[in-house]
Length: 453
Image (cartoon, rainbow, N blue to C red; front, side, top):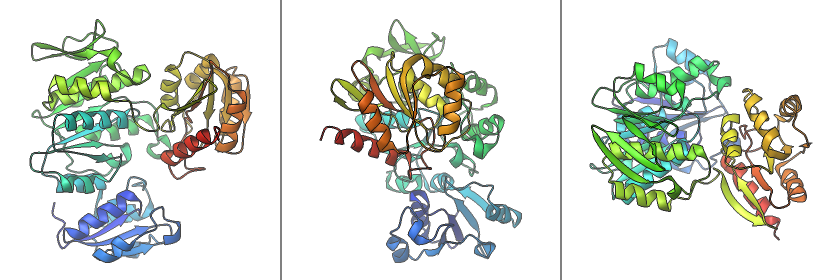
């Protein structure tokens, strides 16, 4: 797919859209960058780079006239492919692709792609650190950090690209073909966009749609939905399991991370070397080790990286201790399943701050665990009413509604006494009160640190 001398419309003026517009313009395309918001409401308000390189700005409008003489439409992850403008583009025969498809077309080195409902960022980051420790020329991007199209531009001929891939990004692929991919888990999420679990699973499976028997896929054996995908892949399957000793794959045996593959056995390290909280993080480490093994990383490099790795910001991140009470930032928990994993990492006596923009996923298991482990449930944001009803239905006591995250932190501090912990794990998206989960987590950490002032 060539972009030179093509007229391309990029939809969405966030980090991904601005990056891909810049790259495509440098590759000889004539790019128009459009966003439904006017310039003063766009998250990235500095468009000087776009003006300097010749990108045409069409901010505050997304009408059909933008499609005149357009060859490709590139969709940012936050833009649904079901919006009217994209439907019109498709009806006109205009090719609609995602930013990661552009990145793939521009990339000349192998790509490792990681998806799943939860754990993507931790697994991707850990794998990237393993590659760096092994002195590989590696770029890490996608749904984490910078746009993938920007990251691939700086990779040498002997390098490798590691990409965290969301379901939104997979909606717009055509040729995207990772040499190694991984699916960590599948639980209900983004159903407001995908409409059903069947559609959500089908979109996730697009990650291996173009693989062949010369490629590899790493699958979670403990997740029944993911395990079943082995029946639809063309690539070689390496399973990972926290619960079962596998005849072939990567698993736990006698407390050791163990690899059985092609008739050979290798031990990586004891699981006690893992510094991350929670059983779900053992799964993330297993997946990262499995991918690294297939990519040729030596065991000694895996071991040292695991030993040194303390986690990713906003994922059960220890903020500080105040009066012998630990405060944890788990702002990345944007769905109940992720918050369940966070709660499972603690024995009991949790003061939980939850709520935000509701994804309307089932609350049963989440609220049952809240009843078991949470001393005080503090609710914020648009989800407050439904979460309160769900909490009452499952017998949760000590439920508190507050108007802001600042009020929630102050109330948690007032309640908190050792051996309790304060945990921000919202089980919701952030967009009702914040621009992103990162902003929510950063503000939470500042509020907590301010308690000491």
